[in-house]
Amino acid sequence: MNERYTEACTLERDRFGGGGSIMVWGGVSQHHLTEFVVIAGNLNAVRYREDILLPHVVPFLQANPDMTLQHDNATSHTARSVRDFLQNRNVSVLPWPAKSQDLNSVEHVWDLLDRRVRARAIHPRKVWELAGPLVEECGNISQQELANLVQSLRRRCTAGLNAAGGHTRY
Image (cartoon, rainbow, N blue to C red; front, side, top):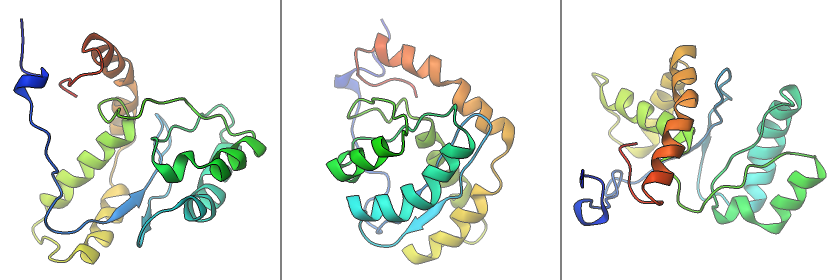
């Protein structure tokens, strides 16, 4: 039996700890990439609704009515005011487990962006210097890369089910 991804053989770690962080919101589908938004400070329910959902998500979903919103269970996403806002606009939301980074396609976009920014000849030295390279690299994501990420969702879901919610190679 391959034990590589069992609980006893894995170590949780914070890959971005120690140097501060930057929050970026973005949406991905097999054929579309939304504008990526750099968020200063904390994202609460009001800011999520006013700065992300209203100007970015709702227009995107109205232009692509066959799409479903998938977001994690962050407090800002699950607040009653946000749920009501989405319901009042007939936004279809995919129910999602609390911890599913192995499964969410956009998590793999973040990983791709992280690798690309780290591979640059000139590295950002301050957290606020990350915004420019991140947005630039978002624009460099190819249609084929998007398709590959989204098409791998079935494999990631199957691996997650087989691991009974534990760690997978994804």
